[in-house]
Amino acid sequence: MRKFVFLFISLCFIPVLVLADASSVDYEKNWPQWRGPLASGVSPYGKAPIKWDENKNIKWKIEIPGKGHATPVTWDNLIFVLTAAETDKKISSKKEVPAKPDQGQGQRPPMNTTTENVYKFMVLAIDRSDGSIKWQHTAREELPHEGTHPTSTWASGSPATDGEHVFAYFGSRGLYCYDMQGKLIWDKDFGDMTMRMTWGEGNSPALYKDTIVVTWDHEGQSFIIALDKKTGKELWKVDRDETTSWATPLIVESNGKPQVITSATSKIRSYDLATGQLLWESTGMTMNAIPSPVAANGMVYIMSGFRGSALQAIRLSEAKENIAGSTALVWTLDKDTPYTPSPLLYDDMLYFTAFLNNTLSCYNASTGEAYYQVQKLEGLGMGLYASPVGADGKIYIPNRNGKTQVIKHGAQFEILATNKLDDSFSASPVIVDNELYLRGEKYLYCITEK
Image 1 (cartoon, helix red, strand yellow):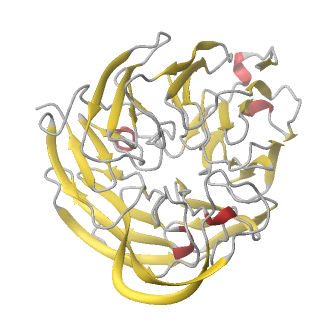
Image 2: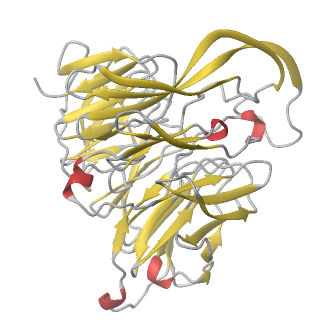
């Protein structure tokens, strides 16, 4: 049920909002981070095809070594991909048995002694023009210390780039900074995460100007940390009272002050980017917070959807200290929110899927009024893990069965096309110029009109 709090605020008090560091056309024409240049899922200058298959509109298709669900990022003529490839080296170790997807909370799973293969955690730079690999480096080679969810991978967090550096994040395997030619500049080891039910890791770093931020929410001591992007030097670190979550932090600039907004089970929190000081907080999300926040026009939207539904629309100019029940909370929703995919914020329209189902809802982002709710994505099939992406008046939603549905952007629900490729898609789409990139379990596709 929606809850509306009506705010009578002069327009002069609505803050200017800058997402990530999207201050230039060059930045907005690339896809430099998880959820794109505006951190909203939108490609402002992109224009991708509506229809394709294995024999139509495929510019190139290359096999990616190993496995990973990390969404690629791009800058100019390079596309960067993270993956984890199994090697022939074997190590005996004790590991917890991964929990079943529907297993509840309680004691941690039992330990099994197994002999397993070591993995190479790799960064690939690929030429956008022809799919050739420009450089490839192994950041680390090791056996992961615990298991991962059966539907996940060891490389599920996305990289980030500013056009001068590439930041490859592998969670417990560390954060690595390369230059655009593939030279390692610095690396940072944060230790080992202990994830709930050994369901694996998968959030991404947030980059703003000279600062890169990582959240480390797990079953041990959780924290948030900010580093100097040029040197890897720690700028600040703040402990968090949180359990496992997978949401990527969002950096926004409100009233000239950058802040880091985090979504988690216990609380939503915002930190001063310069100092790590807590600016404001709200009640938390459902268990297993995964979707990343999105923001525009002075509002931030935070949601999750495991064993319940939660959505909070927050006006940043009103957010101070504890905002629960305050006028900063503009509207809320307690149904049909996503479990795994992040929302899409496109022209004051907020799109999101429901749990793992093949349905889509669209709301007016300013007021919370529904344009449409839980519309069936007929023909797409079950298993939505990828987040929707928008460009040129269209929305792209891939599925794990190899299908991608194209939806018309707007208040009326309309399916434009359903496309099928010989792969499975958990990574989110990337749209740059007139090209659509789909990273599958096996292949990376470049799709464009031919």
